[in-house]
Length: 491
Image (cartoon, rainbow, N blue to C red):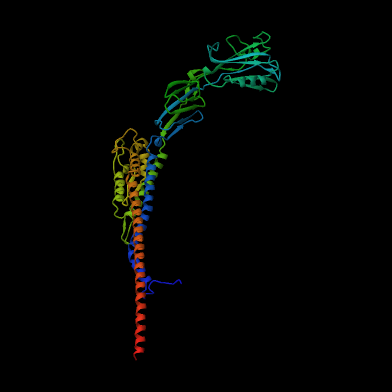
């Protein structure tokens, strides 16, 4: 028959209470370990913010530690109707005058009037690109030659389409003036080297009359017929002519991009009247073109760097301070590694550099406050921004590799990068905090295991005591019964 047992029944002791209290004594170290673990978890959480803030500081510095970060430029023209100017990043600041004497022009020709919708005549049209000279009376062919087969059903409109389909370096247009059709042809490019010659070969063997395809020829060297006939509008290809600070330049295009490094000028209208005194006295109305440094983005980058610095500086101060009013300490109060980071930050801000007329951050209005943060003196910084090249040198010097005298953006970038490296102070500190928390968890496990072992041993001992006490109690009852029986038999 099964029996029901409970610790303490045999001995009459409150075994569960005794064991529970003894085990609780074994677990007393847990309270301290758990409080410490909570502190360590809070430290890890707060230190991860410090890591992020150092990363943000390195990023803000990186945004300034390059030539392109300081290369923004403004370009302006005193007469944007005559010329516009654009520049690439990093172009040297400068200013100059521009006289536009003549614009580059494309060669263009016009045919005589053709009855509307009439056919143009069968044959072959050959278009050469090249250069006209002497009036023009002499043509120097280039590398491009295109032949077009013209049928006896082609009109001015279909001929223009055939020319354009061949893409010979010219553009053909069918033009209807309300009565007649005309063929207009224009070079795709401007300049003397983009001229064209049109030769025709008619199927009837007559190539210089005014009745067939030869009406659309343009070859002054061969004769004044077709589109070279007297009275038809012809525009020869011409180069642009200009003077930069009085120095004459020519260009096949109205876009000047090779005269001044990084500067592109678009010519839109002439500014010189009676150029070379043709038609009267020459009058110049030069355009003033200016390239200046644009420090707007650079100043914004400086502001971002200051903000990133202040975020990490203030956080470290809060985490390491003692609040006398509340008598509370920061999570890292007295932590030498955190205080060392703070000290290095402040020393870097107070350091100097060479290579610029400014040597310290305070020279340009970035001033350290009593709480360790930085304040931007906008008046002072704006004045320094007017000297953008020197301001750049204070923060970034491309050729200066000396870590003691390099620009402040490079200093902050290197500082943040080193701290966050796998063997850097920040990474090492984060690993140490994680190791402490892991050790704490291991120690808690040991305490719990030890307490469990103590509980098992105590319950085993008290179970043995119960069994022994139960046996003694039974013997005592038996003896008492025997004594009672003996007394009755001898009474």
